[in-house]
Length: 309
Image 1 (cartoon, rainbow, N blue to C red):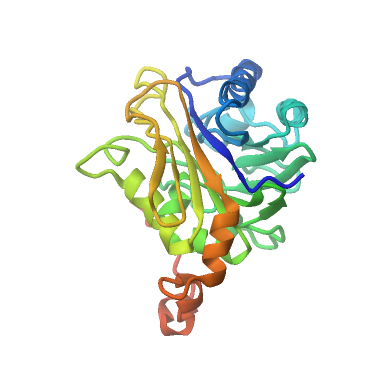
Image 2 (image 1 turned 60 degrees about the horizontal axis):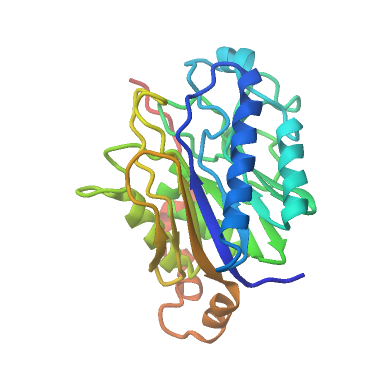
């Protein structure tokens, strides 16, 4: 049944990073418990229908080569973990944006994707592979760079709680990623991130907050953003500042976890009916309609290149 006003839960975790894929199941169990606490704990206030986890929630790329990642941490999708998310999604009638997996796909032998899944009562709905790996540290493949890649790079799921699209961490530094999701119909933009200091959720930089708010207002969309809250000892060599948040379609922060490491759940309201009304009647600040695409020759030719040290 359609539910266009509900609570979204952005969940950040603080767990040691696994070194072997056999350790992922325990992390999944932990996150299933967080889903249940978010849905049942906030039930007296607003029905929580969307739960989002951060990047690297299942495994971070602690190895420096693709070969080592494939030997120790990669998994196919779907897998036993996505099956467990589907079970609880059906039980609680909730949509779950999983933390990322290091994905292997026999269609692309020898490669690793950084992948998040949207899971609902219907099952596995979308699989998003990070389009902009964080260079030069991340050795994952980008769908953009693969000749013959046919899957939609920016999938959007039409669900009873609105049209949901996701992008991962560094993707959000490219406004084009979120603009394409919105052009594909997204109303709720989900950010699955492992955003480290000093670019995190505190001044003087605070890129995390600035970018989340800007992407919301320029696309007239909600943003539900979950960031890693891992301490330095759990995910070296960086510290992870949390600050998970929900932002409305005018760029207002409606809920935010206090910046700083630690496991936290922050819940805020999402009103898709109000968003649709604004998109329908608004005349000023209609950036989606006022975009003069032909004015920007920068997009008429490929730009991507990898600089060598």
